[in-house]
Length: 614
Image (cartoon, rainbow, N blue to C red):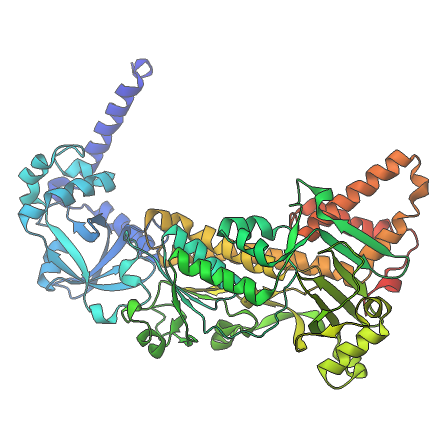
């Protein structure tokens, strides 16, 4: 009785039935009508690239009809070479058609490859047939050898089953790594831009085994925005292997102090929220920090090319993706052998090179400020060493970032308000220091030791952050605002997300198909877009005064009753605001919902507009 059979008996019975079905479908080693219909549908699916990358659609011209015939096949890779096997023997249509076409055929799996199929001598077929049976279970009923049989058994039947090696028809025209899709090979990635996101991604991908080319011409201004880090950066620095170097030239940052008015101030130390938040961060000299990341990338194995790479739209047929390295850039890097990489990463920061080439627009945030800043010595600093100070000014806001031997002072305000301070950046910054009480008390007698740098303080998210064969990372994808200092974290985190998305193929030393790569990059773009939106929302709550109003209203929560209850609620709110602003939980639903709820229902008559940053 069937229900009395053990598991082994069930497996044997099912195997025998499947074998009988396969022999009926391919009676006389020929497909019946049902199989031909099914195969046409399966071939279409394989051609779209949605199946595993070893499943392809073979297209060949019928030697009698002249029509293109498509059928599904499994590619097998042995010693780095690709092969196709006819599990129904030599007397089948596709084998006859391939021979009649002189071996010329097309393989499709999300992209199109024109290939040359060369029949393998009988004496070389045994290892391929053995690997093929392991790869393609559906072929086993047609081959009279067990998949685990010794090679001698496969050699005995090799003459009955044609094997074809697969190579590109025109090797000189290979592009975008297409000839290697689905093979066990080293993925080739070109990163354009050696800032934090580009160098960090080069480190991570090189460690994972990718062949990374990092284009960076080394041109950087003396001062760069992004001198203060948030705690969530530190674990990434450890992962990249640069935290020790960073600690050697940076100022340890214990927290930040926010001042909206003489009576509305909050002082935050990161260790208060440990272990949910890393207990410290760093204030960094940005050029030195960027140099440390680039040096680590080179040590990790990335090929550093000190030129400005040129990007251009790819060929109109889109076979190698939307974006390509220009021919002169390829010629400048002999290691690329004239071939396009499998993936191009735009890490050019605010230059947004790929967006300009592909004419991709961006969503611009409501703030369109300008920032002027410089480094000063001889300041009066009564705060804890490394504690960052953010103050609301008469217009805009100001920062004081303690570095090891100097203080970075910056003003952020609208262009109209900046114009009222003077015509030149130097005049504007010095007048702000002279007229803003907090800045005057700190730097009224200080001397400026660097030129004044100017940055457009825009808020931007690209409408599209990836496409076929390319992706944006860091500021090229989007930039939030220097308020709360998330910039470097977002850059490094974007590098982590891209590397995580590619890791499965790098671990297997495989090249993802176009469909697989598109799916991985789409997931990255969703995550990065979500992070940017979350930071924009949080920053807006600081600008419009809701956070400051919440802090002020918290001092009037006497109706909550006991000191214990009030303290517990105050601690709960402060903890979740800290998780948001530290980067530890900026995208988490509960802290975001809590802050929205409190900003709407818990202000107790305090008007956020009174504390808003103009």
